[in-house]
Image (cartoon, rainbow, N blue to C red; front, side, top):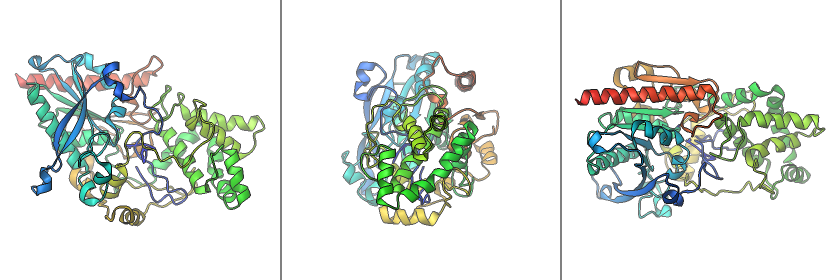
Length: 501
């Protein structure tokens, strides 16, 4: 659900400038490595989807001359199983995240596997300013150049894009009466839920997976994200938790001398000498994104990972002690290699790699405008203590973009305070899935609100695990989650057809 990631990335799904020890920027899952399936110029050959472009308006809300500018918005579709407009067969729409839409489509197997059951048309819409849907002629330097251009990157503009495209698509397909169901994970899940709230006349329901719509100032504790990660590791091994907890000071001390820096380079197989801050950020990323993707089966969403990767990381730390690898750095290297080098293809690690193969760069702007999601670390946990500071975020955003974040705009636009009461009065047909091993789950809707606003919570679940392709090794709880989601979606569609008569 939402985004990010290390999105910028993953990811970029959020971001904390308050982590003074590393300036680590967590976000919604994304990856510097390989997507789940082959990269997508191959869409025509692998049969997964076809690609089209829609002429989209730059600005949906003003009437200035620049508002009339257009850009090409990419969307992917698969009509293999569609029952057709004559049968009012449903349209399943994925609300694109903060990145290349092909990467998300290739990692949302649930939609492809569910389409035959409903005879559904699949549509994946790319978010503006990401992937190939970049305004101003597709020129990123111009589009990201300053606030007069990148200021058109916002969640409200993206939702209006989706609404406009869906309406036009249905018209062109002569499918005016085909019901639309939305799907999204991480930031995309947030968008799916918000779309259902803002455009209920366009979509009959939404599956919002791992969507932290409450992770905004004043709604949840800023510590919940890193508390969850710490609890994930501690639940696997107290020794593993303590080794990581005690490692930061050793790394910082080593980084104070040339001899220590050389030791860090050798111990962690780094391509060159890096500061202790850079190494800490690299390790923080590994522990964070491993927690987000602690899936019960092997995955390749971010980096190639085994099933239950936290368990494997802790086994590496614990095993190294029994093999007389007593150095903390040796233990950490063995653990980090699970995340960064499980395929054993890397000969050294480049901590300066700023490549962005999934086009996630725009998230940093969103985290400086409206996506103000507090992240802090409490004392005596697995990470060094760090207080959340809006001022620190604002100072960075002034430096990077000459802009001041709006910390309460999202809750003003979409709601958040007393969310259960508000949604009970104003919303329907949304599924909120959250896995409690996902650090973003603390900002999710974890209790059902009404018969049609359903929270599905999986104790063992990680970040939007329900949207992944199924495997024979899936545990029963995951199969049950998906079947429950399918049953609810089927009830929405059934009611829609009943009302249509």
